[in-house]
View 1: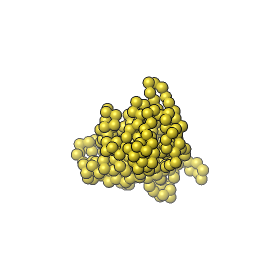
View 2 (view 1 turned 90 degrees about the vertical axis):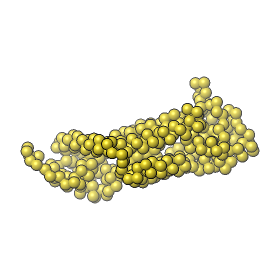
View 3 (view 1 turned 45 degrees about the horizontal axis):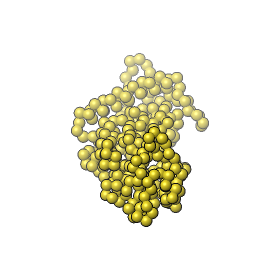
View 4 (view 1 turned 180 degrees about the vertical axis):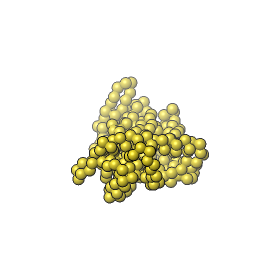
Length: 314
């Protein structure tokens, strides 16, 4: 760019800037296009348009590779700074406003999402009527980079990846539970080792059956290999089977808190601590942590805290 030259960028150039940053981060035009929910062809046109406006070639492209040019590396740093300034300005403006608005594309776990988070989101949306929600409910791990999702609520340990994880329920754990009807027919185990004599409702974690259940007591870990006649990749199915008296479940305390409070399920072996099952809110980039996202996380964290207090007395 020539010194002193004035550039009048179009308004939608901001969208092209966002695409440029994503392509640089992912190293893939198609991955960046998926993230913005546009076609690769549209992304290619936008990138060429941006190069035309900037006046330099930003990427060296071939059918198999894509990398920044020297000019692209220089422009990348300035583009990041510019977008960060806009983000900071937007957050400052929103912080001074009572209304939080925008579109949130969320991935929720099947069981907890349907039975607790949906009503909570109704309440959150009622507080912020200018908010639009798009939801994906599934126990399969959502690929934030490839699917049209901004944020994902996910159980488990922090992912070993570049994803940003915000704690929502860090103290959540799995607990053993069964219905009064099942316990009346088969008796209640008093220690985890007795699970080998019971029908255990197993579920799929990724591609494997979670049939080795771990427990902790007095600093010692106990692992029990269980078996049962029902397996599902949907946590809601396992909880429904347990409520219907089909067996013993090893569920996230958040998933079964309401069933425990209502007496539909009974907690078993309470002297043993179950596996950690922390709940996090995941996003691809810290720039996504807007006032709206912060408000959502705080709202959900408080609801989870109250729910777990009823189970563990925390």
